[in-house]
Image (tube, rainbow, N blue to C red; front, side):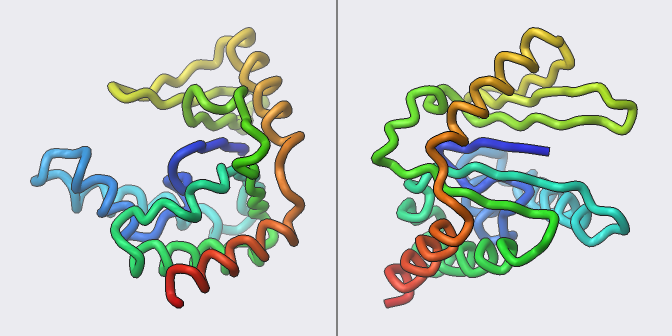
Length: 170
């Protein structure tokens, strides 16, 4: 699975407090905890036997956007740093200086299903969109490759996360 997010840490990589900070602003109050718990259950996929490989491209700006405040973001960044050491997970930052025009439209994820088919999920303000349409999948795969061409190597990404942790805990 691959994902791109220009504004937030991808949902599958979020801590409960980071997710709660997002949902408390976007979901009905009586549904916040339900959504947080659902998001946390998704993380278990990486602890299962034969976990999927996951490549997340994240805009560098998320390291400096204090979702939930400095403590929540610092905790989230510590967690991200731990995830960079998890073999099936690769995290790469796309530097703000890259401009990343191809990625400014929305977050999206691409996945290959067990039967070999591919699907894409794209988010918008009003809803999510999932399709297996070949043309749509191919267009987003090309967009993903364009974004990834500007991404930092893993070691540079890890260093940037460490620097951001120092900023928020300093």
